Image (tube, rainbow over all chains, first blue to last red; front, top):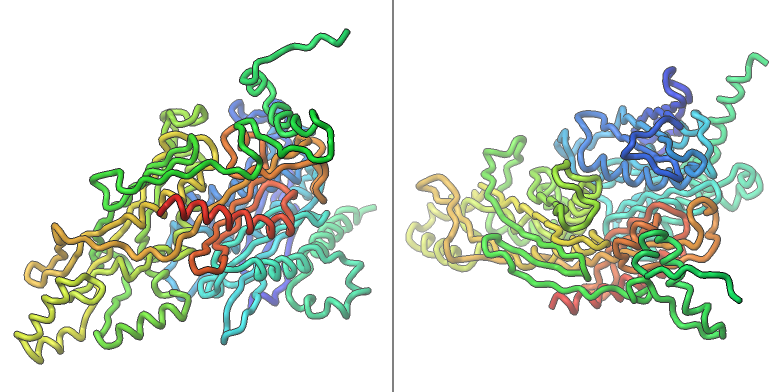
Length: 253
Length: 369
């Protein structure tokens, strides 16, 4: 099961860029590089703020309309996080290379797919945030994201965290939610067939995964016991990844 | 003596500093009277914050397309044309042969419904039977320059339309299949033909008929052209797609065993079985403070949810929400939520927005019928 595997990340994997990160979780592996603030092209230049440029490259083939959509979603979310007003007339470029994505054995794989793949969003958001942290780009908050699917099995509703492509195909709806470290809902993308109540449940689950802060874990371990099994603690993961990187970097002291 | 004030005409004010212009419009009425019951905020275009532009739909506006519609949403005008083209199965790479027996037809349908029409959707997706394409005409808005490749907006819109077409299951694969022997799905006349054939050829023919296979598919090319663009492109585009698909009448196609090709009837047309009426509803969040002070925690400062934003409002708002709902079964079903670009819209606002979208659905339903 992919859902039980813990996320893995490495920072500073690319020597030439300002910041980089490699992240893998739920079958997806993404490498990101961040360069910035650098000089912006004339057409991208904004008099009062930095231009955030996001490039998503698929695992195979060249990017199409689907990648443009992912880029525009990431761009609007990340420019909320980065303190863009601090760097007028400059550019912050984030390049995300998808290295691996889980395959659906039940369908023929096509190189060019126009249909939106929401399940890749959390990996892209997570990697971009890690790479931005690695590059030391000033941000007002970090963000964590998760994908959740609702499936109907034997007449009962079931919430699947980090669904596989097959589960997305057979499931009723799929949702991606991203939260900032202040607990604000940064991004909410859902498709399928669902009701407000189902979305509420998804929201609760996603919030438990994305916004569970580390200290609350020991105090409320019993209370959150059922949720703790529901998925990894993303915020804690982000923090521990950064901490271990800092420790490793300051090892010489 | 008051301080000298510079009087600017409204269009100049809007051009010079759009953000304060819209803010002044939204707050002026409440500031002027000062008592408890403030009149509702008005936008620069004279609408209330929750007021949408009327949707005008005109189906069958193109004579050469199989289905078409012209949708007007204020000054946003979209023309949508649907054209079917036959795709023989031998031209499909990695085609999985599909056959049916006459008796099991009913069962097959039932199974498809039960399994969330997984099989049908797989066909649509695998063989690319729905091809939406969006063009933002050069003259439709000043920001679209001539002679450039499709903009990010056009590409994003076409991805969204494509994904929604598949996730809503608006078109069913069963309508797009062409069978080797005419079946229930293929219209009355052919059915009669078959019955006659049966009568003449007897048992042997019946044996052959059991082996009924798909010989071709209809591919629907859904082309959208923005004639004029004044904000809220997705709602207009989606309304046009739904209206055009409801208007689509494909010629009745059948397999001609003698010529070994698929032939279409000149006169007979069959309409598509469009299930449901999903309606998109978009709003943008206008914030009192410009981005510099906006935090990413809980919402701070005043904000307005502007339903059906126009071009000026879209340029000033970063956060948008689009919800697609379908209430045709009596119960409100959400088909998609797309919220991006900010943190003002939280859980409560999304819940509340479902009610707004429901109201919009009723308006659109009245407009389409």
